[in-house]
Image (cartoon, rainbow, N blue to C red; front, top):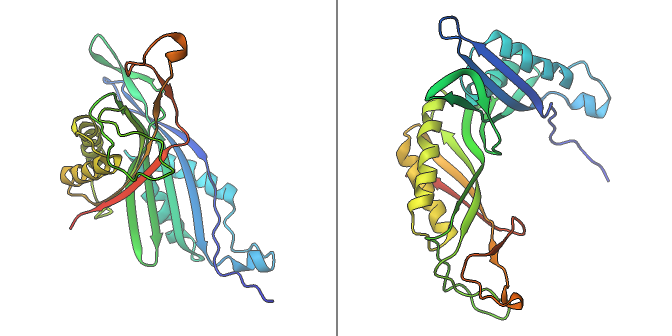
Length: 284
């Protein structure tokens, strides 16, 4: 038997960055960006695998340092712009690098407001929701996408699930009113790397929430499609939306041993196992 290395990549993951942008007086306002960066490089690195020859290897520690140095040297206002900056840098700087994948996960912070006035430098967090970005640069060009991770939504009415396959494995009854809870993972593809990344994010996120709340859902799948269509309607800068929406069940608790009927008010909260619903919506 012979074996050949047919593909390879390597990089640095979970590089944590906080950048503070201090605006001059009189505003005294600070903007704070908290990013986690993942880098993967592809290219002429086979000798490192086959012969232990590292002369072309950009050390992963050097990649980590690049994140901090470029963050210091450059202005940016979105994770998308920073991902694009980093990916372009690696391909343009090192001839042995033929492709760079950079993913940026932004921890969201909300500016504190006191007596209706935004505080210049105090923020509050606490949510698992994040903004995401991905940029790939290689011989075929530059491609960027944005997204949302960990957007938790729930509604206690307006969700139906009936008429599904009835066979010997089915125990779930039809329901014309159920709790609909999910954690939205979304990714959208930009039509141009010069798109206004922030404007797109600000347009898409609210329509996800609005459609989820208002749409009378006959299935998680149906609501997913409507959310994707609404995102495409909200921004001309994107042409494809990938959505993942696990159906995180709320199971009625059996109160009969305690002398009560469950009047659809007491549930066991579950996040696993979960129905895993995925879909891609494209502009046509």
